[in-house]
Image (tube, rainbow, N blue to C red; front, side, top):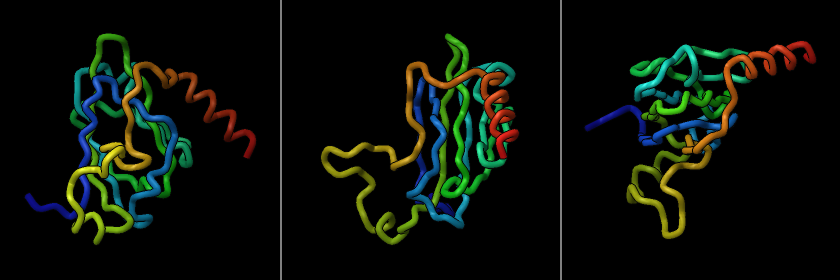
Length: 142
């Protein structure tokens, strides 16, 4: 299959949670498509946080969003016990020629996930109200 993106990553979870990060390996002027999958209550968790924009976005299973992940700090909120959250991301690496010409497997000893991409954590994250309070506190400092 052909795509306008050079890289695609499945994060199989079962609980895909990310800490605030910027994807330095992606094109600074490029888009990152994030599609969320799984079975979870989007009112209680799984929210997408765009820290620099001070936004917490309800992000239900089956939804997709395009963000400039190389310049926008982002993360997501943990989900409830017993729920499942996965994600599928599509990006363009900052060095597309290397991506297109190299094998689609990591070198020996390297992680399969690109630097700055989603990780799988057993716990971690914060609840939505805690994050909203932190964002409000940071806004007051500015």
